[in-house]
Amino acid sequence: MSDNIYLPKLGRVAFIKDEVVGERAIKTFRVEAADGGDLFEHECGQCAMLSIFGRGESMISIASSPLIKEYKQFSIMRVGRVSTAFHDLAVGDVIGIRGPYGNNFPIDDWRGKNLYFIGGGCGLAPIWPLITTAVAQRADFKNITVFYGGRTSRDIMYRAELEKLRESVDVHLSIDKAEEGWDGYCGFVPAAVMDKDPVPDNSVAITCGPPIMIKFVIQNLNQLGFADDQIYTTIENKMKCGLGKCGRCNVGKDYVCVKGPVYSWAVLKNLPEEY
Amino acid sequence: MEKILDKKRIDDWIAALNDWEVHAPALEDGIWTYKPVSGAARLDHPNTRQSPKGFTFPQREVYFSFEQIKGEPPKLTQILPKETRHVVFGVRPCDGKGVPRMDKVFTDHVEDTYYTTRRKNVAYVGLACNKPPSATCFCLSVGGSPVSTDGLDVQLTDLGDRYFVKAVTETGKALMKAAGSLLTEPAAADQKQVKQVHTEAVAYPQRKINDPDGAPAKLKVSFNSPLWDEMARACIGCGICTFLCPTCHCFDINDEVHSKAPLQGQRVRTWDNCQFPDFTMHSSGHNPRENTGARLRQRVNHKFQYFHENFGMHQCTGCGRCVSECPVGIDIVAVVNKVTENVG
Ligand SMILES: Cc1cc2nc3c(=O)[nH]c(=O)nc-3n(C[C@H](O)[C@H](O)[C@H](O)COP(=O)(O)OP(=O)(O)OC[C@H]3O[C@@H](n4cnc5c(N)ncnc54)[C@H](O)[C@@H]3O)c2cc1C
Ligand code: SF4
Ligand code: SF4
Ligand code: FES
Image (cartoon, rainbow over all chains, first blue to last red; front, side):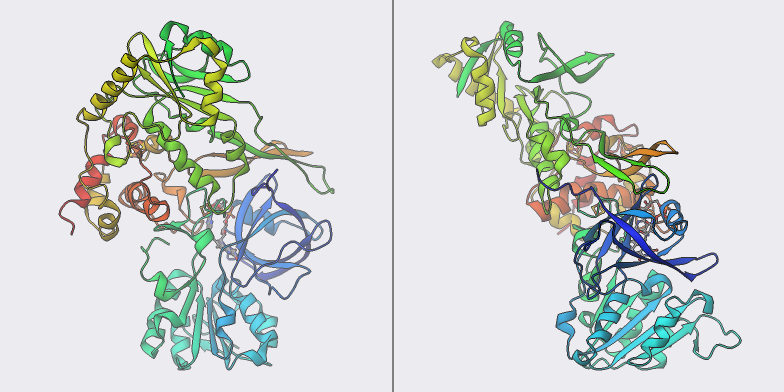
């Protein structure tokens, strides 16, 4: 019998952390294979279909580096039925997991280059594996700079991890409006990027966040001299199967779950704007 | 293998197929529907209301059941389709054409076990259209023909009081062998008549897609055409066009809960539809296909551009169901012609 592509593996939740609380609550989960062993191998940028039996499935970016084999990390924002059920989980609970799905960031092509990461809101999760892998292989890359912004200081995820990153890379945090005690940038992420004048020579910029942020970040990068093929982003279309069958996530002829979610702007800008 | 079957003996052939569950069109409350048959099958239907795609891609497919006692890990039980063998009689050539298209979707990239299990257990005994049965037929425009054998295992051609029976696949030959002496050798006159019938069948005028070969490229450059919104204004988003289509394959996956403690339920796939607003709507409310124009464009472009770019063939087989059954008269032939007209 051939493999059943819809049958999930069982994963045990080994760790849960409140990342952001309040209206746009985000929790981080570490999931390991319920029967011991490894779940699957993945690459930076890929996703997995997570499920809670009785609630349903959701596509979530794998937020841990492929170098970590013992668990997969996910950061999930509470927005609806399945994500709320995730926020109600306790350590030890068992979930369904299938994947990995989608393409990946071409990290091997980027060795020897400067990397600029530009994230907003919960858009730090999809690029986090790339950031942490690059940092683990620090000598392979030139300057690494991380820009990340939240609406308020309470919307900043991976706060402690970002502080630790400062030891080996440049980290610039921003919030939309000034707050007492905030010593980072105040304003939107695209402006925070301009503030530091990233250099396009021998560089790649990777951006992920709300669509409107991505749009202006790309405009600004172009203005700074970044060519379209030096800019990468990811897109999220609604997904059900992850396998190019349910017909839901296409942009033109491509199913994002198979051909995406990672795109260079040089490719994406020529696709119909249906994302 | 080519044979002749006396029309009155079709029930004997069906009875001889005792390893198979036989289905054929039956008229029920004025609607032609595929139904299990054990005896005589009427093959005088224009076409069935629903396409036969449900034999391989049913409206509802259970993936697995889950069961969980509180504090214990869940137990999953995979539920694969039963290995019942089906023969479907009376499949029209346009619906036969749908079969290789669905095969592409469900086996490209990775194989869908539910589809392939059903697919290997179904055989299609097609019925050529001596004359296009409906005013909405346009198979000739999309690489089909009223006498096409694509996707079929056996092709029947109506010769008045008898059928000309032609095997298309090995499975088809096996079905014909099961008929034994019911099938007889065709005479030279039968051969001549079937040729004549087929020649006439393809000569009947049909509705036309004006430039089917140019459509993929022309649609591609017409993505931002104002015609989409204009032509979709009347659409009520009922989804009939896609549910009845022999090649529409979109689906949803949901968990159905039958008991809360202990937790018991099933993960189920059901047909879904690109004409529904929430098909693509994110939880945030953002919707990449916000209005009926964008959704009509998706349906038409999928059939006449995207599928063609991926697999080198149109996904539409010209059956005309979406044209004749749309409650507001949205007509895919007219839409393709209008949008591509005057495009370079
Ligand atoms: C490639 C990809 C990566 C993603 N990564 C993350 C991540 O790392 N963290 C995170 O919090 N969210 C992520 N999302 C979004 C996440 O999948 C949705 O927020 C989630 O499915 C909503 O499910 P729900 O049941 O809670 O919401 P409901 O509104 O109850 O959802 C109903 C159904 O809609 C679908 N859906 C709704 N919104 C989306 C959406 N934006 N994208 C895809 N499907 C959607 C799902 O299939 C869901 O089952 C990602 C989406 C994609 C496509
Ligand atoms: S059948 Fe007609 S009204 Fe219904 S969704 Fe299709 S195009 Fe719209
Ligand atoms: S798009 Fe319409 S005419 Fe074409 S195969 Fe589907 S239902 Fe038939
Ligand atoms: S999620 Fe089903 S086709 Fe992409």
